[in-house]
Length: 128
Image (cartoon, rainbow, N blue to C red; front, top):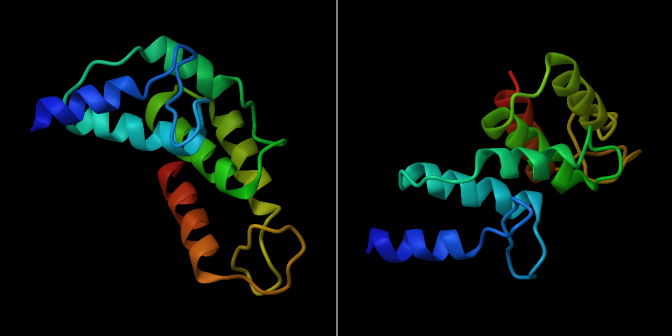
């Protein structure tokens, strides 16, 4: 069974170093889970290619909330991001903080929601 799962995970890795989900293009969300699966299965994966895919997203200024969270989480696991880059990504994420101190996927919202706050917690925890 593990062999079949590993084969599926491997089949989702694109040439650019990212993993695809439902669509054929690489996505940070699916990349995190693809790499977590690969690590759990003890699979080898092209670290330099994956790092290149992650690096293309810079500090996440052009990403939506969910993909910004997953950029932070990918950086924490699979890239030797500098402390300055980690801080910059977290600063970008902080721009989604609400007046009630939680998070929402829409900048400027007064009221947070539990799920978006949980995602932010994961990103901050992963990046220390």
